[in-house]
Length: 388
Ligand SMILES: Nc1nc2c(ncn2[C@@H]2O[C@H](COP(=O)(O)OP(=O)(O)OP(=O)(O)O)[C@@H](O)[C@H]2O)c(=O)[nH]1
Image (cartoon, rainbow, N blue to C red; front, side, top):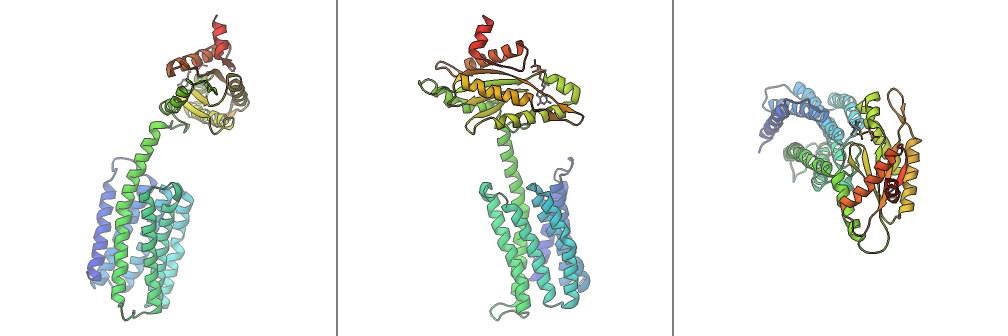
């Protein structure tokens, strides 16, 4: 394929992606990532079109090169920015976009000084740099990243290096080597741009789908507000401990607690403040638990804690420490400091327990704590005595 056809393919490819992105989620409010990505594709599409028209002899060199490359830098910088934003690094997105101004300035200066060698060098180094910035965003959290994301990071880095290398070669041997002509080098670079367009376009769409799927799977087992296991995954974690309790040995305790008069918090300070309190209470509790302990949100403002290898007296002590910590840690709301207390029911797993009987006993202890005036810890044995 000759270079003019390649430039046309790049222009059409970017413009069709641009059209698809324009109509994607058209009815919804666009996220910053999606807006940045759309701008990126619009700029790149326009840039390649200009460079194609230059190659076809329609647009004069200075206009096509200066405007075309400025648009190309902007497009690739926005693409990298969208990736940083997608991976929660807004400061890097801003930094990448800020670099655009000096980059365009540098390119114009190089164009004025030396159009044949210095200008291609500046152009390819700047583009390679922006593509590498996007690759770095993709490589964030490498250890936990999916195979698709790792592949995209590596492939983008390699292609970015190829783009950057093209400029170096243009500087060292403007006429090309005898075994590879300059026009061949140009064709290779534009093929790299073509692959980058495909990788960043379709690869990132697949990545977004993969991330959405992972988030759905996470929300099936985790409570979205507190980021703690939900009822379903707490019960799943409990199952082996119930089975283990059939064998004599080390006891396992269950603590059930419920925040006191939470309706009043919502009514007085508003639901968002209530949410803040819930998250703060979870943070306080986590500080008093071991890594092997399991905290889960059961329903509303009720939480359960599984304490492996813990007897009733020790579990009651843990619960008492948490009760005191919650009561002593008011949460900063928008209008005031919000005081909070919680009531606790404590029990241990018995050999003949099912999930139902275990929770029934813990809940009876919890209800006894509420009935006795709240902000206290009641052990299941005491609850039975209290009822009698
Ligand atoms: N802000 C907020 N409130 C919630 C959430 N889940 C449940 N609630 C509220 O928590 C309150 C729980 O009320 P109850 O457990 O019935 O009673 P209470 O007011 O806590 O009083 P006692 O349990 O008797 O001490 C209700 O008003 C729910 O709307 C949540 O995720 N966020």
